[in-house]
Length: 203
Image: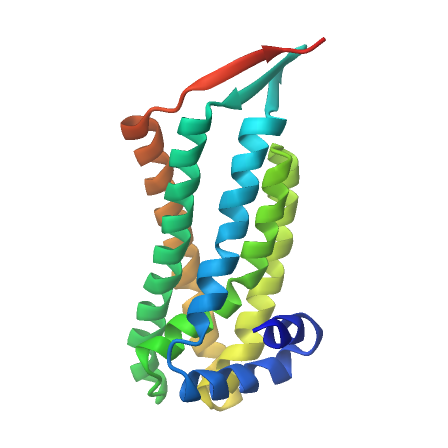
Protein backbone atom coordinates (compact mmCIF):
# COMPACT_ATOMS: atom_id res chain seq x y z
CA UNK A 1 0.00 0.00 0.00
CA UNK A 2 2.80 2.45 0.88
CA UNK A 3 4.48 2.09 -2.52
CA UNK A 4 1.22 2.85 -4.34
CA UNK A 5 0.57 5.77 -2.01
CA UNK A 6 3.95 7.35 -2.78
CA UNK A 7 3.61 6.69 -6.50
CA UNK A 8 0.25 8.49 -6.59
CA UNK A 9 2.12 11.71 -5.76
CA UNK A 10 5.33 11.08 -7.70
CA UNK A 11 4.28 9.14 -10.82
CA UNK A 12 0.44 9.09 -10.87
CA UNK A 13 0.27 8.05 -14.53
CA UNK A 14 2.06 4.79 -13.67
CA UNK A 15 0.43 4.29 -10.27
CA UNK A 16 -2.99 3.65 -11.80
CA UNK A 17 -1.78 0.65 -13.78
CA UNK A 18 -0.35 -0.87 -10.60
CA UNK A 19 -3.57 -0.15 -8.72
CA UNK A 20 -5.63 -1.82 -11.45
CA UNK A 21 -3.42 -4.93 -11.30
CA UNK A 22 -3.67 -5.06 -7.51
CA UNK A 23 -7.47 -4.74 -7.63
CA UNK A 24 -7.69 -7.53 -10.20
CA UNK A 25 -5.50 -9.82 -8.09
CA UNK A 26 -7.03 -8.85 -4.74
CA UNK A 27 -10.59 -7.47 -5.15
CA UNK A 28 -10.65 -5.72 -1.76
CA UNK A 29 -7.10 -4.43 -1.80
CA UNK A 30 -8.36 -0.85 -1.43
CA UNK A 31 -9.99 -1.47 1.96
CA UNK A 32 -6.84 -0.94 4.02
CA UNK A 33 -6.13 2.29 2.13
CA UNK A 34 -9.66 3.60 2.63
CA UNK A 35 -10.28 2.54 6.22
CA UNK A 36 -6.88 3.67 7.52
CA UNK A 37 -6.51 6.98 5.68
CA UNK A 38 -10.11 7.97 6.44
CA UNK A 39 -9.01 8.02 10.09
CA UNK A 40 -6.70 10.99 9.42
CA UNK A 41 -9.43 13.66 9.11
CA UNK A 42 -11.44 12.19 12.00
CA UNK A 43 -8.49 11.86 14.39
CA UNK A 44 -6.96 15.25 13.55
CA UNK A 45 -10.31 17.01 13.87
CA UNK A 46 -10.88 15.40 17.27
CA UNK A 47 -7.56 16.76 18.52
CA UNK A 48 -8.17 20.17 16.98
CA UNK A 49 -11.65 20.77 18.38
CA UNK A 50 -10.96 19.38 21.87
CA UNK A 51 -7.40 20.61 22.44
CA UNK A 52 -6.55 23.50 20.09
CA UNK A 53 -9.98 25.04 19.72
CA UNK A 54 -10.89 28.13 17.73
CA UNK A 55 -11.64 31.78 18.48
CA UNK A 56 -14.95 33.50 17.79
CA UNK A 57 -14.30 36.47 20.08
CA UNK A 58 -11.21 38.18 21.42
CA UNK A 59 -9.69 36.59 24.55
CA UNK A 60 -11.86 33.47 24.24
CA UNK A 61 -11.22 29.99 22.86
CA UNK A 62 -14.08 27.69 21.93
CA UNK A 63 -13.77 23.91 22.11
CA UNK A 64 -16.11 20.93 22.05
CA UNK A 65 -16.57 18.52 24.91
CA UNK A 66 -14.85 15.20 24.28
CA UNK A 67 -18.17 13.36 24.06
CA UNK A 68 -19.54 15.80 21.51
CA UNK A 69 -16.28 15.81 19.52
CA UNK A 70 -16.25 12.01 19.47
CA UNK A 71 -19.77 11.96 18.04
CA UNK A 72 -18.75 14.40 15.30
CA UNK A 73 -15.57 12.54 14.38
CA UNK A 74 -17.24 9.12 14.27
CA UNK A 75 -19.95 10.63 12.10
CA UNK A 76 -17.29 12.20 9.85
CA UNK A 77 -15.46 8.88 9.50
CA UNK A 78 -18.62 7.00 8.57
CA UNK A 79 -19.57 9.76 6.14
CA UNK A 80 -16.20 9.56 4.38
CA UNK A 81 -16.34 5.78 4.01
CA UNK A 82 -19.97 5.87 2.86
CA UNK A 83 -19.23 8.70 0.43
CA UNK A 84 -16.36 6.81 -1.21
CA UNK A 85 -18.48 3.66 -1.49
CA UNK A 86 -21.34 5.66 -3.01
CA UNK A 87 -18.97 7.21 -5.55
CA UNK A 88 -17.82 3.72 -6.48
CA UNK A 89 -21.42 2.72 -7.15
CA UNK A 90 -21.93 5.75 -9.40
CA UNK A 91 -18.65 5.13 -11.25
CA UNK A 92 -19.70 1.56 -12.00
CA UNK A 93 -23.19 2.66 -13.05
CA UNK A 94 -21.79 5.23 -15.49
CA UNK A 95 -19.22 2.79 -16.88
CA UNK A 96 -21.89 1.07 -18.98
CA UNK A 97 -22.12 4.15 -21.16
CA UNK A 98 -18.38 4.16 -21.87
CA UNK A 99 -17.78 0.52 -22.83
CA UNK A 100 -15.99 -0.25 -19.58
CA UNK A 101 -16.86 -3.27 -17.47
CA UNK A 102 -15.16 -2.79 -14.09
CA UNK A 103 -16.29 -4.61 -10.98
CA UNK A 104 -17.86 -2.72 -8.08
CA UNK A 105 -14.76 -3.34 -5.96
CA UNK A 106 -12.55 -1.85 -8.68
CA UNK A 107 -14.76 1.24 -8.85
CA UNK A 108 -14.77 1.74 -5.07
CA UNK A 109 -11.00 1.22 -5.09
CA UNK A 110 -10.59 3.86 -7.78
CA UNK A 111 -12.72 6.31 -5.77
CA UNK A 112 -10.70 5.58 -2.61
CA UNK A 113 -7.35 6.28 -4.27
CA UNK A 114 -8.68 9.37 -6.04
CA UNK A 115 -9.83 10.74 -2.68
CA UNK A 116 -6.34 10.38 -1.15
CA UNK A 117 -5.61 14.16 -1.24
CA UNK A 118 -8.77 14.78 0.78
CA UNK A 119 -7.65 12.26 3.40
CA UNK A 120 -4.30 14.03 3.75
CA UNK A 121 -6.02 17.43 3.84
CA UNK A 122 -7.60 16.24 7.10
CA UNK A 123 -4.31 17.03 8.86
CA UNK A 124 -5.42 20.68 8.81
CA UNK A 125 -8.05 19.70 11.38
CA UNK A 126 -5.31 19.90 14.02
CA UNK A 127 -5.64 23.68 13.81
CA UNK A 128 -9.30 24.61 13.22
CA UNK A 129 -9.35 27.69 10.99
CA UNK A 130 -11.86 28.62 8.33
CA UNK A 131 -9.29 30.07 5.92
CA UNK A 132 -6.79 27.26 6.42
CA UNK A 133 -9.53 24.70 5.77
CA UNK A 134 -10.62 26.48 2.58
CA UNK A 135 -7.03 26.73 1.26
CA UNK A 136 -6.19 23.10 2.04
CA UNK A 137 -9.46 21.78 0.60
CA UNK A 138 -8.96 23.77 -2.61
CA UNK A 139 -5.47 22.29 -3.00
CA UNK A 140 -6.79 18.78 -2.28
CA UNK A 141 -9.63 19.27 -4.78
CA UNK A 142 -7.19 20.38 -7.47
CA UNK A 143 -4.92 17.35 -7.08
CA UNK A 144 -7.82 14.93 -6.70
CA UNK A 145 -9.24 16.28 -9.97
CA UNK A 146 -5.85 15.77 -11.61
CA UNK A 147 -5.73 12.17 -10.35
CA UNK A 148 -9.23 11.60 -11.70
CA UNK A 149 -8.56 12.86 -15.21
CA UNK A 150 -5.16 11.18 -15.45
CA UNK A 151 -6.22 7.94 -13.84
CA UNK A 152 -9.70 7.06 -15.08
CA UNK A 153 -8.79 6.45 -18.76
CA UNK A 154 -5.85 4.27 -17.70
CA UNK A 155 -7.72 2.45 -14.96
CA UNK A 156 -10.68 1.67 -17.23
CA UNK A 157 -8.56 1.02 -20.37
CA UNK A 158 -10.48 3.61 -22.39
CA UNK A 159 -9.60 5.78 -25.35
CA UNK A 160 -8.54 9.33 -24.46
CA UNK A 161 -11.76 10.95 -25.71
CA UNK A 162 -13.98 8.49 -23.83
CA UNK A 163 -11.82 8.80 -20.73
CA UNK A 164 -12.08 12.59 -20.64
CA UNK A 165 -15.87 12.54 -20.98
CA UNK A 166 -16.18 9.77 -18.38
CA UNK A 167 -13.90 11.73 -16.00
CA UNK A 168 -15.97 14.89 -16.46
CA UNK A 169 -19.16 12.99 -15.61
CA UNK A 170 -17.56 11.44 -12.52
CA UNK A 171 -16.27 14.87 -11.44
CA UNK A 172 -19.76 16.37 -11.69
CA UNK A 173 -21.39 13.53 -9.77
CA UNK A 174 -18.57 13.60 -7.21
CA UNK A 175 -19.14 17.28 -6.50
CA UNK A 176 -22.86 16.67 -6.02
CA UNK A 177 -22.24 13.70 -3.70
CA UNK A 178 -19.64 15.62 -1.68
CA UNK A 179 -21.88 18.63 -1.09
CA UNK A 180 -25.00 16.56 -0.38
CA UNK A 181 -23.41 14.12 2.05
CA UNK A 182 -21.55 16.83 4.00
CA UNK A 183 -24.67 18.97 4.33
CA UNK A 184 -26.65 15.96 5.57
CA UNK A 185 -23.90 15.14 8.09
CA UNK A 186 -23.81 18.70 9.45
CA UNK A 187 -27.60 18.88 9.74
CA UNK A 188 -27.70 15.54 11.55
CA UNK A 189 -24.99 16.62 13.96
CA UNK A 190 -26.55 19.98 14.78
CA UNK A 191 -30.19 18.91 14.93
CA UNK A 192 -29.97 15.41 16.39
CA UNK A 193 -26.68 15.07 18.28
CA UNK A 194 -26.70 18.71 19.51
CA UNK A 195 -23.03 19.67 20.10
CA UNK A 196 -21.84 20.93 23.50
CA UNK A 197 -19.31 23.77 23.57
CA UNK A 198 -16.73 24.87 26.11
CA UNK A 199 -15.74 28.54 26.18
CA UNK A 200 -12.32 29.07 27.73
CA UNK A 201 -11.06 32.58 28.58
CA UNK A 202 -7.55 33.34 27.25
CA UNK A 203 -5.02 34.86 29.61
